[in-house]
Length: 565
Image (cartoon, rainbow, N blue to C red; front, top):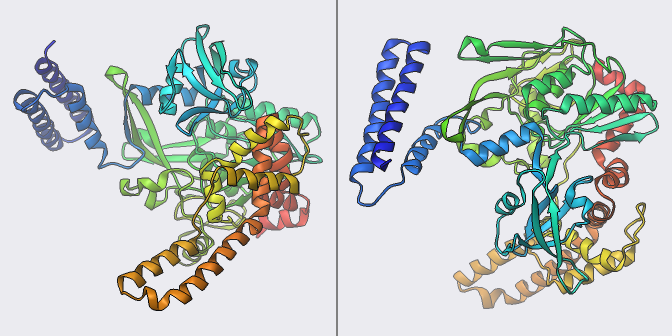
């Protein structure tokens, strides 16, 4: 079929689809207006295809036009091409066919971050830090993680060949691994933070979240759990149905969990608990942060509005929009915002600044402003300008988007040193290097002065360097002095200042020692013993959010007073 004929057919289909929508949803005047614009779109597409100086790919032309439409909508509405649609469905269903490992690009090569327990990659002995140099004979030098993932994925039961470089070995290792169905757990860990105080980490809301959470609660109850910490930090959300069903595990049958309101009447719904709760009354803390979003905020907001538990952490992200997926032809789909959701007190979770596409850069998890000053400003706005609502017990809570915690935990900004060490994967690289010569590090080890000394030597061997904030400001001063021809006049002062800045920079390592030790321990334990050891030896013992939760749990008067204040 010619490109011209293809685009003509596409044009007719678009017009017919629009016409069908007009007839069923809007007034005739709107039909005529939208129909004329749709016709204008197809006329332009046809002219470009027929008359442009060079051949134009019909698919690219139409896809670009569709993406242009999405630009005037909110940032959560998207046209999903086949690979994006497949990935979304995979995340939602919580399974895919492949090898079962997390990878990233390191020094231009695809590198294993960690194999998932029980998967083909784990059973075959792949390790954190292994460099995958070939996949099916194809070099991975410069390959993106997405391309590498696509090569390693495939139908369960088929095999894929990998060539691996491992530190400490001279020759590459050759593997032929059979692909399998990999289940992505939404509850990566559950256990006890302290005697009879349970802890469950819910990482996202997928199709099996209710079942996984229910099984975790059941096992912890059988082992004597009397209170629970539910960790929703950095949980970006997921399925609305799972948000409702998981919340129902803690709230009574018939209690409102969330409601949705849209432009079309069939989007106006109230969701209530349909079953008796598993944990109707034991003390409960929910941990949240600035990256807890969407479905996480439904659960958190309902718990707060019903005074069912104490919310600890930071103000949540503020995504209160409902998206529906409309499958289209060509294995594509439209993800369209159709409603806003409201928690039981009547608060809308959506933050206004996250509704406009111009703010899309801030939607990436981890880039949200993270300073104490920002938290003070937020609290000031909350107390003075935002609408007050009331929980079922009469506590005052505030609207304006997101869920504000009952108890805040200060988020400490990483120093420039720590930011650069993390950005360049220095802790990960050192862990890979260190464990080659120290494979018997015990699971309960502490980061000793000797390990710190070896870490500093490792940084020197890798020529690690960074610029502190003072250094960057100092360089600006020098440039200004040079521009104004004052450099010779100011040289003695500048030399003194530079020497002092270097001394302060050296002190930054000592000032960041606790964070450095925690990061070394985190990556070594994950490499040697897996994710469970990370939770039990680092998160449950040293995490400030967990520590705050334990303080509240162990002080029954404080817990009760928070829910009555």
